[in-house]
Length: 253
Image 1 (tube, rainbow, N blue to C red):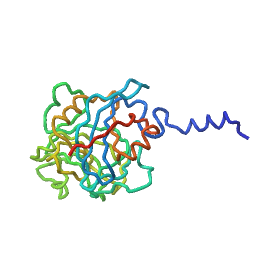
Image 2 (image 1 turned 45 degrees about the vertical axis):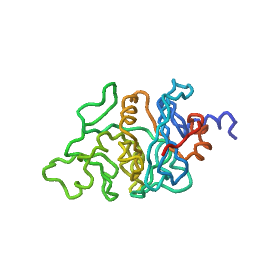
Image 3 (image 1 turned 90 degrees about the vertical axis):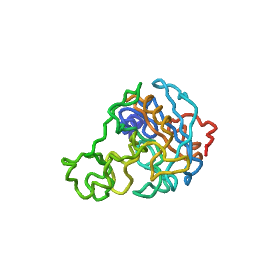
Image 4 (image 1 turned 45 degrees about the horizontal axis):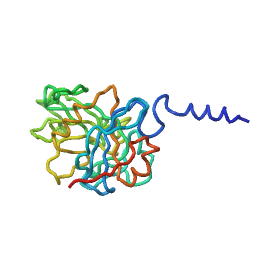
């Protein structure tokens, strides 16, 4: 029979080599927290937090208003959320993915990031696309086609270079990324809002100055993450998911 000590050592071997088994990993020391009043909300708040390694989360600045999916939120797939019971994020459901997610690269029309920024980015070209075709082997992937002068038929609806102010800055939320599951949702970003009451197809949007603030604040070495939850879920999970202690999240309309 195994001793208690042997059982505990075996259990520890099942955990990841670094970071928490669920929730915000140890190496994440910059955290973006999004709170919605409920699962069907299109409005919510975003707030930035940071900590020293192993330390307590501290707010960086006051919360500011954001918009979510036009039909609210649903559980996504990232660092936490994929094992929860309830409504799941699917392609074209109009819901923003809830859970905890790593932040990916910045995609921008500009040749450089705003002053003070230091984060991996890609200047979007006329050959770049983000694939949302569930039948494609490149589903939920960034791709570059070889000849933009003769694009494939699917390219027009999935290209990233538009004359669209809302997509000047795209900050990837790594939902359904490792690996992508066909139909579980694609192309989830932070980007500029189109209006104070214009929800999205599943992204998180905000005023441009607030997005630029996030871009200039993030550092890759601090492994920034995004946690998005309805307020009741946040109250239940903040301790087990290693999130900041709940505040008085006031939703601005």
